Image 1 (cartoon, rainbow, N blue to C red):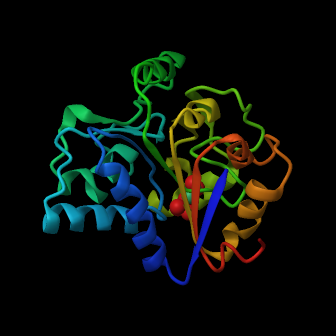
Image 2: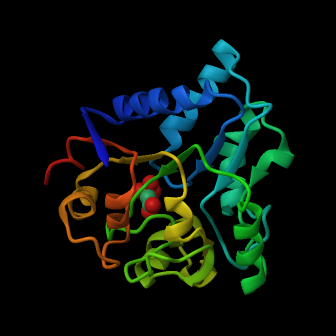
Length: 240
Ligand code: PGA
């Protein structure tokens, strides 16, 4: 079930997302599912602000991230492991052993199995998600089966082009594969918090909510989830 909230600006979207996150942070030892990408940065800034100003502690909080590039070391400046530390973990009191980001250093299927295994006995209390303009969630591109678990996947040629800007403009340096939670893995979360801004997300948001439930729009699987909060700016909501 979708609970849709539309706000005027990115700042207000981040504020609203933080309210939803904060309610979960107030529970005992919550497990957070986190995402990279530009969209959640505002939410992470609000979490840092709240930690600094109000002392909200992450000492007993565990996190699992959605995805990671294959074939670059964790400490690479463009790894999602580095992104999460720079954008959030280095600024709060989370314990490093409680942080989980998939390891895709070799791209072997064993790395995917190990990550899925690491989640076997936990339930993510809140999973933060962005959405791609093609309806992808994490690195589950169109065509990914709804019953997929954590797996290694090829990056879409468009994604490689788009991400070249982070690799000195050189497409050849962009990893060609990623390790990602599968759609079935994501669906196990108790609550989903999906954030999207900008007109280029409007079609994907429409298809997620009103389109057929079909792997051609991976996010449409969320139609079957009991608790999805979708926070949008007016542009991302413009086709609803
Ligand atoms: P973005 O990415 O937040 O950088 O737009 C979202 C996504 O592709 O999942």
